[in-house]
Image 1: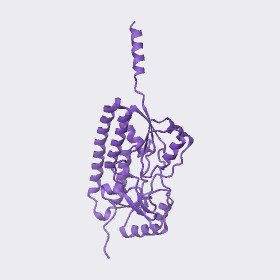
Image 2: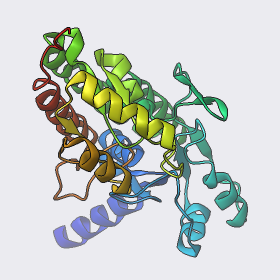
Image 3: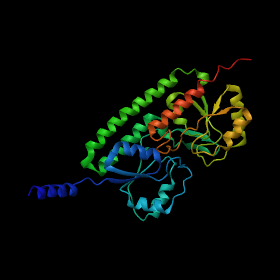
Image 4: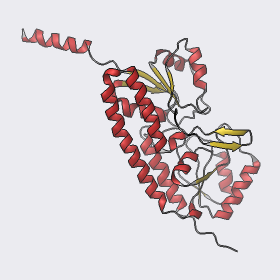
Length: 297
């Protein structure tokens, strides 16, 4: 009799077991945020995988199936992952699509084509807090029975993001003004610079699909010599041909690649958002600390 009762109880529990929300994220940073908040209440896939480039991603037939089956689709917006809209049209289903940068004050950058919006908002941990709040609101809306679960995990994670911000801020607060210049492959770290008082320069523009212009290369090479730069950073997603060219012409060293638009594979140094920011911050601090005060002639 007891055995039958236990079997019945197990059957009832299985009937009422929580079915995870199927979530599609456009790229790995958003996937990481969703997993931190959703835990085992969500099943998340990232369209653009580790070390991938969301600027130039080409959707596949498998992606169409993922979108068709999704309960929620999270995108960055700000013209980073515009290909998602076309992908949704091919999935023959009106999935719920939410832009996680809603409410963020975007950087506007003057480029040769005009003023463009910088989509790399996640590089400021305070913007990451807004990402998390937006994602939490949607998860609660879609799965109200798990509302307290999501809110608790979000509060805990936001506390960690504030701590992350303060740790990185402490790393750079002591840097003198002349040592706050950083060279990277493309214009992907502007929000990091705005958050922590650094100035980033790059031979390529906002998108990795853009070609480096000769005048930009010449400007950077001149700046490197003038400022006494010691290290130039390639990026995990970018073709380093241009960066190698600049390094060869200036004699500057190539630093450890930074992670701009994607997390690393799980075994890599940037397997989570927090790990990515600390990886970047540590190597940037090491590079800027080597810059000597310019000597006036």
